[in-house]
Amino acid sequence: MSGTDGFTLIMKDGVDPASAPNKPPLPPREHQQRIEDGLLIDRNVEVTLRDGVRILVDLYRPANAPDGPMPVLLGWSPYGKHGMSDSLFPPHSGVEPGWMSRFTAFEAADPAYWCAHGYAVCNADSRGMWLSEGDVRHNGIGEGEDCYDLIEWLGVQPWCNGKVGMTGVSYLAAIQYLVAQLKPPHLAAINPWEGFSDWYREFAYHGGIRETGFLPRGAGNLRFTNQRYEDTDANAQAHPLYDAYWESKEIDLSAIEVPAFVVASWSDHGLHSRGTIEAFRHMSSQQKWMLVHGQKKWAHFYMPQSKDMARQFFDQFLKGEARGVENWPAVQIEVRESAREHPLRAEQEWPLARTVYRPLYLSANGRLEWERGAAQGHVDYDPLHEEGEARFEHRFEADTEITGYMKLKLWVEADGSDDMDLFVAIQKLDAAGQPVGMTFYAFYENGPVALGWLRASHRALDTTRSTPQQPVHSHLVEEKLEPGVAVPVEIEIWPSSTLFRAGETLRVVVKGMDIYRDALPNLPFARHEELRNAGRHIIHTGGDYDSHLLVPVIPEKG
Image (cartoon, rainbow, N blue to C red; front, side, top):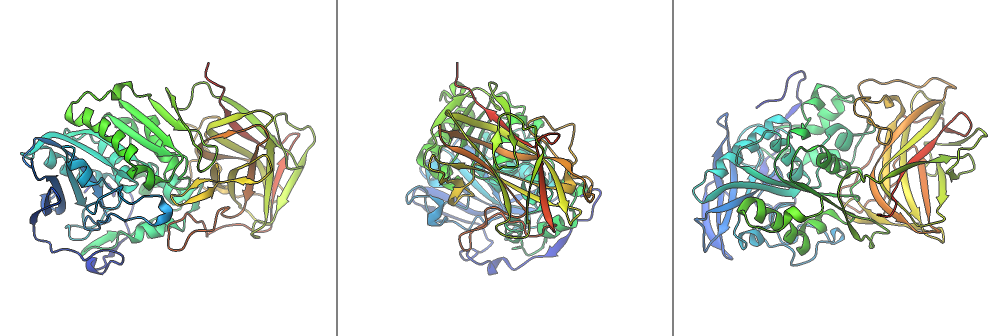
């Protein structure tokens, strides 16, 4: 496998795959073939990779026409192809009974649906996972090469028409970027459904602050192997700055040329929202479409309308059928008013070309104003106290749509510390001043419009990638704060789309810890618990201090 130059990878001994909690019993390694519910199912088919390692895959084909020729949909995952159910997700996920069959693996395509429409489905246990051979590698170019080898194996099977597509959520989406850049000849179309594309900035270190909730949980899911596994949590802790380890996870999105139907969301801040949209922006594919929704991600993937839309895409690019996909709008976005109200609108590009970027200036009295105040002032708060925060509000006099990238520029000072962790939430209040909840992190409906994070010592920008509306931080070195010195920081706010009606309010919250901390028991949630705060945080406003929120205002079409 490729991809370990310049650093020492932390590997650990695996845990007996048969001992994995919350999984069905691990089936025997031997190949088995049977027919169930109209599906011809081949369990544990061996596929040999370029270095001789053998991985195991499950194949599903329509029992009434197993010899094809037919295209294949591939789901590449470490989560266990044997973990199948028609009720994989808790009630808070929004996935309704009947949306998937009992053959569905976690975050993967439903074989019963796709085989009924003339497709084969392949679910793979990636290298080292469960009963597949080799050491487990967590993404990186080596895993992309493994997936490449499986695609090429599938593409020449006698029952395959030579075309392979990929679909799936999260891990099953991120692997698509990784392999598509390598251009396997039989990969004909991809459908990444919410997957981050920047390991450091979107998964492990938000604004340079280590994520301590989802990352350890996700890394722990990769320990069930008879060999060794890459301990992603330990590696992340060993590499707090952007170095060769993170470079080994980089993806050349511009190298992706295959037709792509990319599905992103405004509702997965802290995990997938930014990376999915960035993947669409930077792909070189001449045939690419993006849908950005504001709903719960698993519910949106499995809902009947979404499956039908994905089938139109794959019918056209894997079967050669005329399904009118070329007439789809290049971009479709849901403009959110609340968690339950999010009408869909067609656009031709992203970001929207008619965007007007306007600064809302922070004032010491807690307001956000279109005009910059002449008088200097400041707001301070205790970053160690759960109630310590700064709030700034703007009440709209007319209906105003905010869609795209926001940036919060602050002049900050730490009284009593040489660093500070800044957590930012953009919130919506109704005309009565009550919070309007948005869908958030797959399960919740009381979330923010958008989030941003920054450790002040990581404030240096990558000048080759940053734009006036979207700062990108280099994270190469730390630059500590000096006592009594205010410094400017630019905080990237992840993309969003919200309509504020006349009389409604946009609120900016700045805090020294996670603003959203109330997770449901046993469910994944983003957290940041290793902080550098002390003393008091001071935000300077007005006069020489141009602290402001840059907002993307969208005029009506025409």
